[in-house]
Image (cartoon, rainbow, N blue to C red; front, side):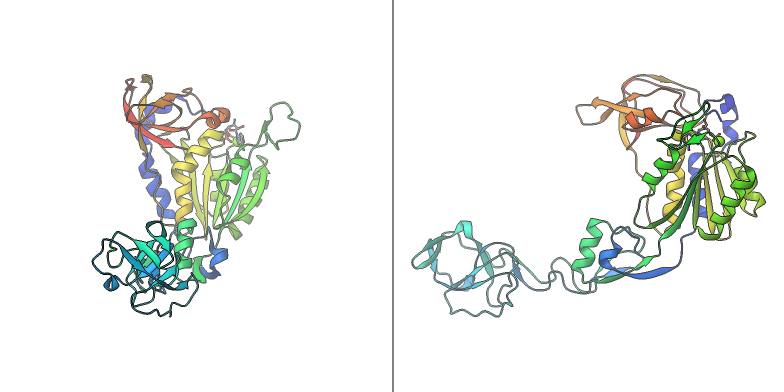
Length: 414
Ligand code: AMP
Ligand code: MG
C-alpha cells in the first residue's frame, strides 16, 4: 500500500473524513450491559447512570478559614472590637457548642459553625490579647461561612451517564455520597497485527523483516480501565490462520482491531476473510492522508475495525476515526478533540483531493501565543520515528493545494 500514490485524481469518489466517521459511528452501537461497582473500583470506568447528589454539599454550615466565629449582633460601634474566647471547635466536632453572648469561639477550617454564630474572622485579622481577640474591621454577616447546600442541594444533578470517571468525576461522586455506581461493563477488545514480515522487538531481524510497532502503539492507546483487552499478538498472512483468529475473536469480543492487510494487495486478506466468516464488511476508501483504506465490519455482536499496516496511517486512522467508534461502543459520550488554530511557518504546495493530517513540530509561538508550525516530510505514512518527534498533526483541508507562510490552519496537538 502506498499512501502517496497517484490515486488522488479519484479522490472525489472517496468518502470525506466526516462521512467516514459518521458511517463508522453508525455501526458502533453502545454496549447495553451494566454492573454495580464500588466507587474505588469505578475510577477510569464509564458511568451508566445519571447521578444526583444524595446529600447537601456541604452538608452543614462550616468555616472556610482558621480563625474565630462571632455573632455580628454582639459588636458595638468600634473602631476597636474585643471579644473573650469561650470555646474551641475543630473539623469533625458536632457543632452543638454554645457560648455566652458577647464571646467568640476559636474555629478551624471545615468545623461546623454553631447556628447562632453568623461570621468567621480570619486569625490573621485578629490580635490575641489577655482580654480575648481584638480586631478593627467590622465583619459582614455570613463572612467566611460555607453554607449548607451552597455547592449543591441534595437531589441536584451532578453527572450524566456516558462520562468517564476521571479525577473530577470521582471527587464529586464521593462528595455526593456514592459508595457504589452503575457502570457499563468493560468493553472486550481483541487486537492482532497481521503481517508475515513482523518480528517482536528484542528478536533478531532477518531479511525483509520489520519490528512490529503497531502492537505496542495499540497497547498504549488501549490501556484504559474500561477496556478488557485480549492481545493475540502478530499473525502471519496465512488465510487459514487469519480466519481462525478472526472467527475466535468474533465469538468473544465487542470490538476487534487489526492492523495491516486491508488494502488491495494479494496479501491483504482481511476484507475477504471477514466476509467469508459471515461478517458484513464496509471497506471504505476515505479521502484522507495518511490512511486511505480503513475497514469496518460487523458480525453478530462483534464490531471490527481494520486499520492500515503503515504505522503512521494506523495511528492517524485510529485517532481520527477508530477511537471514536470505540468510545461510542463503550458507552462513552465523548466528542472528538477540537483543533486549535496554528500558523504555518513555511509555505506548502501539495496535491488537492485528500484531507491531510500532516505531522508537524511547534517551532515557536506568535506574540499572541498561537503556535507556529514546521511541516515534517510530505511522505510519512510509514515513518514512525517522525511521528515520535512530532508535536501534533496539522489538518490540511481536502481541496487545499497551496498554503502561504503565516496561514492559519487547524492543529491537533498530541
Ligand atoms: P499492509 O497494510 O499490510 O499492506 O502493510 C503496509 C506496510 O506497513 C508494510 O510496509 C508493512 O510491513 C508495514 N506494517 C504492517 N504491519 C505493521 C506492524 N504491525 N508494525 C510495523 N509495520 C507494519
Ligand atoms: Mg501486510
